[in-house]
Length: 245
Image (cartoon, rainbow, N blue to C red):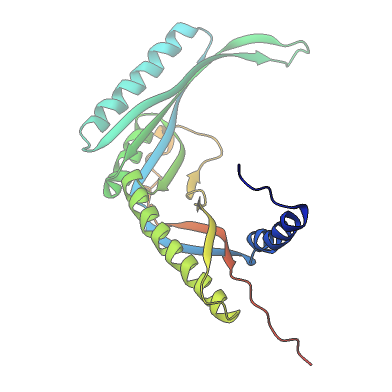
């Protein structure tokens, strides 16, 4: 039979164990929040052009024929351009109302079809924008931007640069507070990219009527700034500083 511990011995053992347990629950070190930013200006290497085809008249059927004719002419003209993709964004047939006599009454129809063209051949942009307008298309917007492969590569470079900067700042903070080391508790990265510049027109108007007087469009692709923000928190070991007098 095993001997039983007396209440006095058991109380002494528990009292001795309390400081050791309390040491495990000691207060955490100093928590510091940090932010690091890496930015780079990247040349725009892709352009997206949105244009519309419009026709208005009393009957809907001739409008469809006219819009289809313009769309086919533009597609054929652009088909010879290398590395260019085209797609239809939307097509809408709407009634035209006449309110000159008070109550509105339908006075005809308007058919609008919107198309988008995307290309990385920036040197050809002016030529095929001019072809779109000459065929009756109305230019709505021209957006120069960074192509996806270029953007992903730049983001990876910036992410590594921001993480390195975050680690350096953590080391500087630890050195400034006389801490022998630091521990990273959390890190998150965010990608910030301002919207790319866009050339827009108030209303898409066919260029056929002014083709003789309007010069060929001149455009510059420019650059866009990419930015990666790394934020997080670190923990520094507890350190007692002497009180200043």
